[in-house]
Image 1 (cartoon, rainbow, N blue to C red):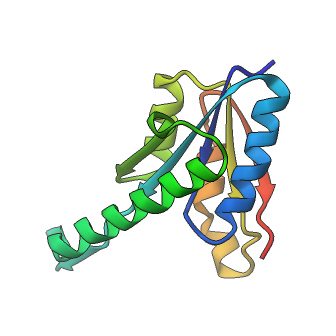
Image 2 (cartoon, rainbow, N blue to C red; image 1 turned 90 degrees about the vertical axis):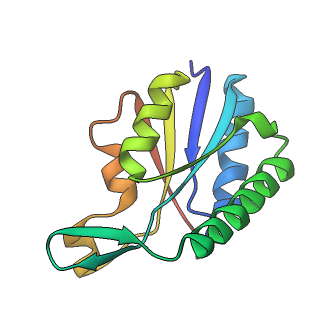
Length: 143
């Protein structure tokens, strides 16, 4: 049924569990598994006029470490390095664009079960699920 599965990971400790589950689904459907991690820049606001990213060297270090972690998760699950995708920006937009580009039939996201104000404001997983270009699956990320 599914030929290409895209797993969005935030590189939290739960990402390894999510990757194992996504790999099991990919194996079940004989599908290709791709992983994506999106680095969200931390803007430093100057009034209401514009925002600048924080220290560029710090951001590059964060991206380099994130890439290492992403590749490690891929290697642990037998996913080819060229199926590891990194980008910077909006999680929702990048995941949706990559899903269209691959093209993916299924996007998997981890749900951390936010409560209170976080639930009211929404989550990245919720944003990815809404208006996705294909089927989506939210997997409860165990703590």
